[in-house]
Length: 381
Image 1 (spheres, rainbow, N blue to C red):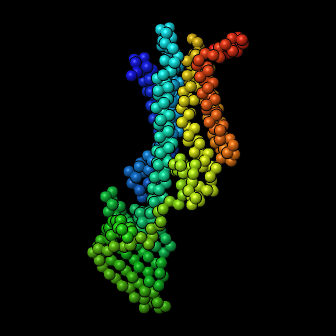
Image 2 (image 1 turned 135 degrees about the horizontal axis):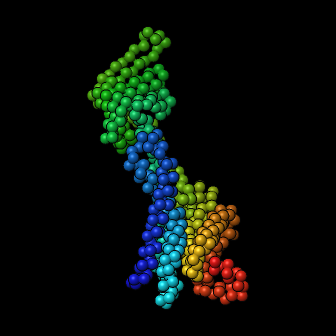
Image 3 (image 1 turned 180 degrees about the horizontal axis):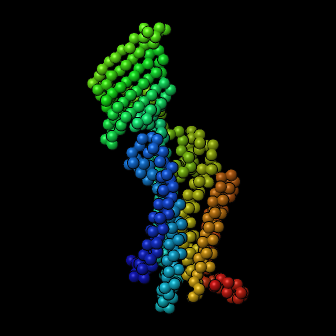
């Protein structure tokens, strides 16, 4: 069970963490959602479909955001506790740095579990479903051809016009002109109709209309026109539908086993085996980065002596250190895709930073700094 002090520090850290995660995720989600606006505008999809698809990209955004949100939250919380002299009171009461670090490490452990779940299942599952849905929508010619108030030409020789399309799926004022066979053009006109799905493919049900079929001959004056009225007519759209099978999945859309061991018949996996393997190691090492960020924040502020001028220098140094290490990690991932011998460095980098931070938190570095007073003054500033 968590005691009162541990719960207090935990919730002081969890609040800013949740807030930072929501804000950063919202920003990234918005940028991703804007890329799919063409589905709403050009593909005739509903607002519900738009939000469903944009939510499928959420695990990918969370995977990037959570470690950064944890780092920002811990810097804010520790700086606030120091500025309000709460840490001074805790240290004066005999509370050790380890005890203060326990709730921080507990929050870090929860973040690491979330990152693990995202990297191993949620992110690839979401991205895979998103790609499949996008492929189906963009290949659904039957839906995209019905655009309210506009003439569309889904295929050569076919023109479709719909005057109005209601939210319940009813379409009014239908005109379909099929001139793919120049010698026998056909025009379908109907007062209303709707698109339906059948086992044999999509169809357009038309009500109260007529079919005008002309047979062109060498003498235009002799061209007969056949006019057929109907109460209900089913127009087959399956001939325009495209295949909706996704050919291959890229690195972000693959589960870990598929990254490390692609199937022999997987053309993409066999062609980019080294790149997929680097992506797999990147997902595994991503679990260490929340711990590294938490230790950088703790090592920067927990050992800090009281300073009336604030701790801007320490916070700035922590941000710079985290940024440099993370960018270096990205560079190692890209290099490891071409040089597999660099893969151990992917893990060594965050583990080394964690070790250095633990040394700083333990106070062992002060014996070294005692030999160099000027350096110690700079560190304690």
